[in-house]
Length: 111
Image (cartoon, rainbow, N blue to C red; front, side, top):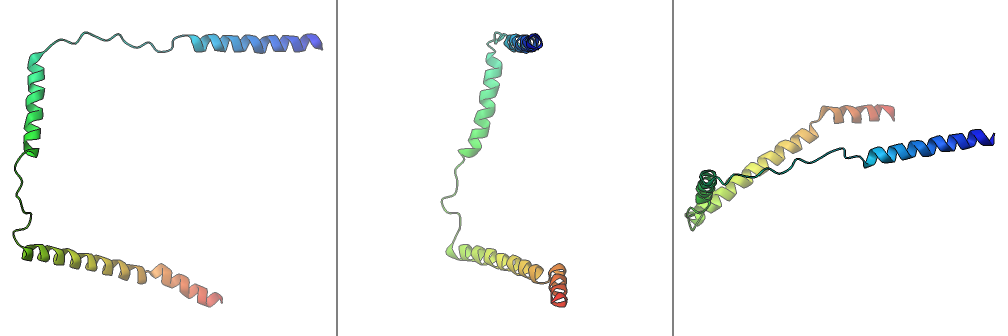
């Protein structure tokens, strides 16, 4: 009885040692970095593309977004009325939901 227990312990210890050895083995070896050629033409192209993109950001913006107070008020009125229309449509859709009406009808019949 004691011999079979010692044999099982030996197998478990041997399996753990083998797993430990496999986990210590290098499973991934990173590639050595290549020497990057010094290509001034590519660097100049990248710099020119970046400058072309940044030039749009550097363009002069108008000082005032609205020409007058009237146009600002008109935009606010249009935006506000659109928001009211959207909220009204959502409210109508919520109150005219046929499933909610059917559930209320069934609930009144059950009681």
